[in-house]
Image (cartoon, rainbow, N blue to C red; front, side):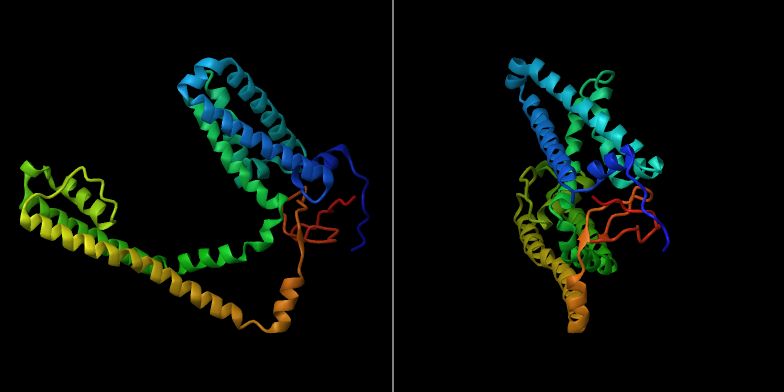
Length: 290
C-alpha cells in the first residue's frame, strides 16, 4: 500500500480515547466509565429500598441525573467520533448504550420507568476490552458451538418432556381431582413440570396414595431427565475439543503467537486487529497510533 498516514484530528483523538483501551487515556476512560456504571446500578438498588429512598431521595435523584447526563454526553461523543454513526447506533453496544441512557428521561413522563437504568449493567461487557479478555473467549465459543450443534437433539428432548408433562398432568387431574387442588388440566400440567424439574414449589401436592405414587415416579424421572441435555452438550463439546486437538503443533504455535489489540476502526468499527497493524483488515481505513 502507498497510503500515507494522516495527522490526527480532534475526532480521531476522541475516537482513540473512547473506543480503544490500549492507550493510557483510553484505558482510563473505560475504567472511569465502568465505575460510573457500577455507581449508577448501586444508586438504583438503593432507591428501591423504601426507607433509604425516603431519607436520601434528593441525593439519589441528583446523582442519577448527573450520571445520566454524563452518559448522554458520552453517547453523543461516540456518535460524532466515527465516520458512520448509523453503524454504531444500530450495533450491539450502540443499542445497549442508548437503552442505558433513555430510561431516566422517560421517567419524567412515565412514573416507575427509572428502574430500567439497571440495564446499564449490560455495559459492563466492555470489561472484556479493558482487560483484553477477548483472546480468551475461545473456550466460550466452543461451548456456544456445542450448544448450537446439539440444538436438534435438545429440541426433540424438550418436546418429549412436554408430551410427558401433558400426559402425567392429565392423569394427576383424573386421580386427584379438584378437591385436592388439581382444579384443571393446565394447572395439573404446571404441577407436573414443577415436579419433573425437581423445583417443587409445594403449592399443590397429591394426597391420594395413587397420586403420591405417580408423583414419586415423576420425581425419580426428573433426576434422570436433568442429566440428558447435559450429556448431549458434553458429547458435542468433547467432539469439538478432539477436533481442535488434531491441529498440528506448528499451527497451534502460530495461533498462540497471534496477539490482538483493542484498536477500533473509525470507519467500520471493527476491532480484532493485530498488534502493530497500520490499516483495518476489513475496510482498509487507517488505524491511528501514538
